[in-house]
Amino acid sequence: MPDFSREKELMAQGYKSIAGIDEAGRGPLAGPVVVASVILDPDHIPAGLNDSKKISEKRRDKLFTLIIETAQVAIVSAPPAIIAILNIRGATLWAMKEAVLALPCQADYALFDGRDVPLNLFCEAEAMVKGDSRSSSIAAASIVAKVTRDNMCQTMHKAAPEFGFSSHKGYGTAQHLDALSSFGPTPHHRADFGPVAAALSRLAHSS
Image (cartoon, rainbow, N blue to C red; front, top):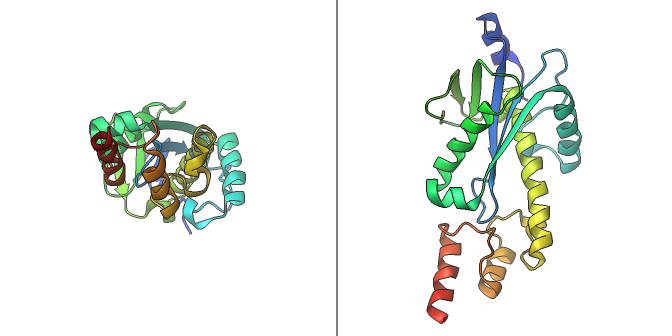
């Protein structure tokens, strides 16, 4: 389970506002990549924080509400148009930097899940591999990002119910690939991702 130990170490070194940053949605064929940045209140850390993939949807929703109520939170999404320009890694790093900048309270240290730290940050930072399983702040960010993106997928589903976005969340399931073949890509799809690019190519050759 993640804990607040790294944050406590940094506070002992004089840092006051420590943000955890994580993303949701790097791998799907459709929808945005969503990044959340969270500064937890050390006196009001919600119990049961963990990697968002390791807890139930019901538990995620409850924790999401608790995090929003007790922490400083910022959420930034990079839509398919930005992903097409920057590629998925570049779009994720862009959204990570913007999420730190968008915090209501300025962070003086940032903990990023994974191996990458955005360039030209205004605060000190470090990357933590499997950070959402190690740091409470990153785990909180993973939950906020996941719940936010899942809600976006519900909106995508209403716009294009034949694709089933509410169930597969944009990932390349058999249902999703069949819909791509039958109906062609929607504006929600990432044009430079392999199966989507192939579907666009088929449409171009058939017209």
